[in-house]
Length: 283
Image 1 (cartoon, rainbow, N blue to C red):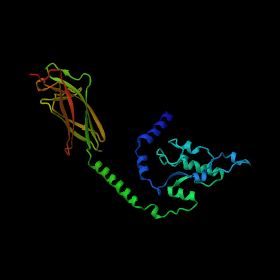
Image 2 (cartoon, rainbow, N blue to C red):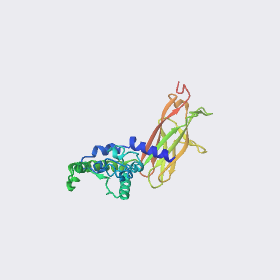
Image 3 (cartoon, one colour):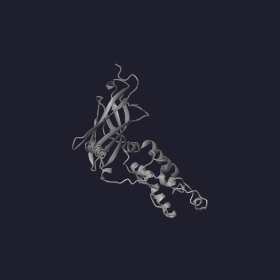
Image 4 (cartoon, one colour):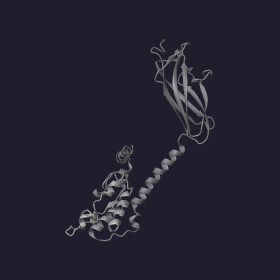
């Protein structure tokens, strides 16, 4: 189970999550990213081998592969920047621990900019100042993400606080009653997206004379039902809708279910189909 969950996490981050693509488009030479400083770590060599008298001088990387082992994406940061990287920095912590053990300075894997990396290769210092962070693209990104945030907040503020969905029974699609009327069964779900109990009126439209009853109820068929829904809950009921055969124009007609909230009048609707025998509505 754990292996399967880890595999799915890696695949979701790699192929489904849009953030790596967005992040890659936003990076420039002054962006801090997780970086393997190969100018310091290469050439690699085992810690035991480099202790020998005839050992070839090697970089700080001892090729322990601990950075790969701790990576939730299973990538090797030493191969350079990769779209799979989620910038968790676990490789930085692992590598710093190894450097402490072998007596080398930390930072073989670190947060660095492309500008820092190029300067270190040339052996010159790359000073970091306020212009490294406050740049025109910084203001552009803040403005763009701010507008996106406002749009999301607005959509949440004005969204409907109730919803209805209707599922028609598959088997049987219809039943012919003793009085000749046709009955269909539906599962109606009403969502109350407020933190307070609410009362809704469920009504029918689209078919003249359509009446409904709640499954298991002895009440007379009616064209509207009053339903109480608990806070932040989805209320599900099974209803039967019956229609006189002379009101049906075909063997499949549209029928609409509408809910109206009792206090503020918020309305939601759902259109389903009403099934009848072939030849219904023929005169």
